[in-house]
Image (cartoon, rainbow, N blue to C red; front, side, top):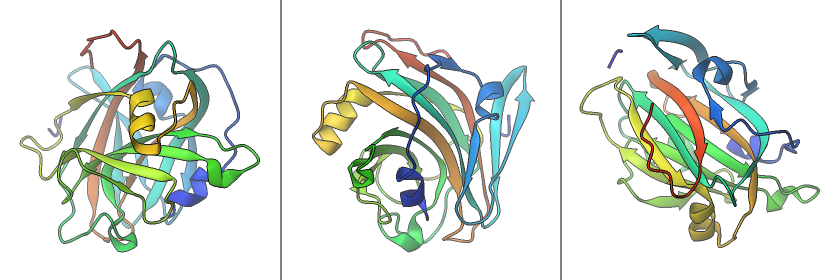
Length: 216
């Protein structure tokens, strides 16, 4: 392998549906599209027999999202893989003008009839914020950003496996102990910086807390 508007999405009422515990790229590419400021191009591609979703961004900002209820009491751990061609230069991700990410994956808890109670955790590959840091999204303070990777990758395009306990992250970042979440999305956006970027997404899995799986 070539190795903005987030607040609007957070105010969408997420319908409940049966969750898929394993979601392959072939399924992710069929998720619903939410466009904010121009379209990111998502397409399915295969490299060495492995399917991935490739995101190509040219002044765009659109997400692929899926409405589903996941029981965090049984499967609180989210595992996925992603990769980037590079990162953005000269941006401040804590500001609206720098709210761009080559890859991001986020989970949402619906606020129901009180949309301001909707909460989200955004796992991102940051350009400049240090790995492990978190901050409130400049467009929607109820969304918390968490940098799992930062800076130019050692191998551009190579998939990196991530694994997070979502229930623990909501407790740490939002001070709320959730028993379920209502939606998940991927997004590659570059509309604020105007810098073209490419990202890749592999399979997404929900796992029990005791799992140590590292499959792609």
